Length: 409
Image: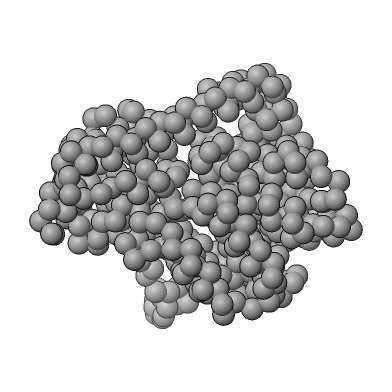
């Protein structure tokens, strides 16, 4: 019998990566045996029962799709033309989409993460953009996505000294070193992880600076409809391109359609000339072909069906409005409850933030105590998911926060 000697293999040299900062914490939460545990870490919407609901309009669309029993053939490289037309009009807003002087091309992608990667690959490969400016802080996956696309990451400052609001002057000053031909990533609305957004006036000033410096913007639009409404949330994009700029817009339907597991998104290129718009569509297709070839069918068909049916579209907008209003009410109730427990601590900034997330102002030590002593899970930077709060956990949550804040004073 021949014995094969074991030698060191290629895989033996692979280092063990640490767990993902968000999903690793979710695994800890699942393994926690305490019955009163609260998860405020992962960015998914939860209803009063603590579940992530399937929207009624989505269920209705799936019934229509099942009855139609369509083909499972490949979609085009850039996805369904009907989907792309509807999504481009949605993310850009009616005024931009119908502006004869602007030319846009949308491609369907498997989620917002992939749309960002496509944007990075396109800028790096086609236009040789080697640097992208990203807010400090930002979504933990942003730097990894653009680094993987071959880009160097630079940071522009974002928050005030208390990490609870925008320091716009500091933001502008930190872009002084940005150079023409570099890219900048902008959270269009409901900044992740802070919930802190610029005002319309500040957006105008920032967009003007971006054009003056010759930077190229990527608008990350993951939370359309969670700010003011679907149309108003697109203001930063609309203002930029209508003032002469060109941009890439990366959107996701995970949050506003609740299609987390379906992985549905899009990337839209907005050009000032028709020839550029046609060229950008071809470049999107070429980039997609080498990465995943064609997008999946089911989730995109849901979005296409809802956006193309007036009754389902109206139902979706109503459901989205209810979600947005519930989050606003949760913020107000949380702030009022904390004011009753710690009158000398002002949590009003949480009411001024928008979307699912909030930079709570909690320190790393306080977050650790919440997890170890009270089974309350939040990210170490103090980001909490407001949508993880409900009437059953509100009071114990606020009491636990009051306890760790008081003991730190």
